[in-house]
Length: 505
Image (tube, rainbow, N blue to C red; front, side, top):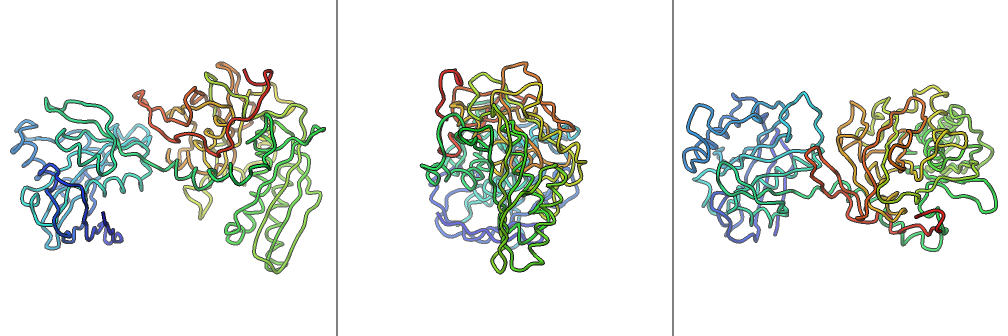
């Protein structure tokens, strides 16, 4: 199968040279391909705008097919219109040929049409229709092109659950395009199949950030209860050590912020272990002294804000930009990631203040650079030695995001996990998809017995939003009770931490 997608120009997605081997499909979704397709331009319009030419064309085509041709909807003023046509978030994709003739269209919208309620990233595709004159046009696979465009549009919008009720005769086409059957259903007395597009956002992030770890650190990852933890207890002492490097591209692009984050990520790692931070060491690479000064300025400011001294390190000039920081903390009883067991409640404790870091929208949430030192220190001490309650298991939310980090906690504990999408504490300025995959300023995932108290984390917000399960991987639970797969199995490949009878039932 060969597919070339051109760039978006003037609001349209240009689909070129579509030649696929789907075989026979229902004629109403585009007929059979025998030659490379003519150019098809797919443009987007707001579904609510009844005067937009593309919306007018789509509604007219819907009526001609679903009302007049199929008799699926009643023949009255509204025809096949429904509440999604009045949702300001809904969009219509309309396909035209090179001469501007309308070939077909499809509608995408949140499953809940009430725009006053939060959009959780659960959308549906509907009203997929191909013009009768385009169904047997040589080389045109209009239905397949629209389905692909709808999937791409949904994922670009951060949709995490994308579904459609498909006429039973067209199930094969959808399956060959990668959709999954969920169940049989009936729409207006006609047999349909409820189908789901597998969104790979979480799996892709895990693969890019954590999946190689198991093989890479084999023989270096230590042993026992704390394999896969955010820090490492130093044998024979009450010291916990943590070490993180900042991406060189980030150091080069924003050196002061990189210096701040070098402290931030390490004290958060210690926080997840329940250790009080006591000291930092840094290793800085820079092209010149001026650049090194900028990195160290950010590091110095964060160290002062968190109240953790920098006791040493190394600085190298005339080299590419780099930064690594090691943090030392103390606790006599580190909190492991591996302390969870099936049935425990999962809690997210996160600082929802702040906003996206400029230049990192959707990837880094900055809640720390504007916080008062007292607030920062209270959050870091949430699970510390003096905390009134310490959970059975904990992990700092890392570059794998909330979902990937929950997968790591579950993997170390030898369990799986379910996350309730609607119950996750989230800033008003972040979509669900971005929040579940970004690096937050401060966020801890903990597992504990049901009814256990929330961590005392200063200004952070805390809520139970899931549970550990017997089945491996991470699933998302939606308001209708449906589960969708987020991560299929283990995240890092490190596997379950070795534990003794006293540590893990």
